[in-house]
Length: 199
Image (cartoon, rainbow, N blue to C red):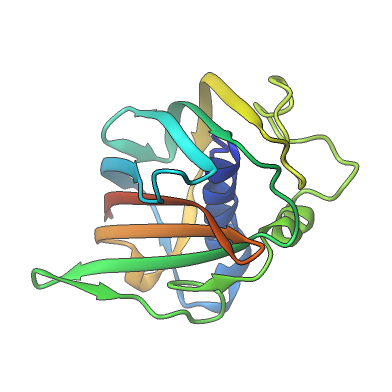
């Protein structure tokens, strides 16, 4: 999973890793021989004074081929230190017959509440282990706490391998919203939209 940067983005990316690499073992999966991700778009959806904000995010090519290479660059900031526990509420919707249908949370996949993203990060990247590339090269953090700072990931290339997806996630238009919270407050919000077309 592409690890873009800034806390909001790191969280989004970690969530993707959790969904597609860790938790999918419980689902009826479909081996994707070739897939395309089209029309990727994003926007902040938090309050104007939200501490964690994604400022820029560019992803190419469009469409993104799986398997294939992806180039991404991003920048963002958090005005407060982000410490455990960091909750993440995810809302996943799929367009069905012209209507957006909320995908329920089943075994940590779909529209789910994650109590502590910091704990998920520690499971994916054990403390003491170097952060994965390109975070390591650019000195970017991958564990809590995330210091109040601006973060920037220069244009970097990632390879997207063959993947197994839940059968219901192989084709269609999707919207994802992630709400990051801590200490009873909203810290940031990010909306993503994309289409998946697979063989």
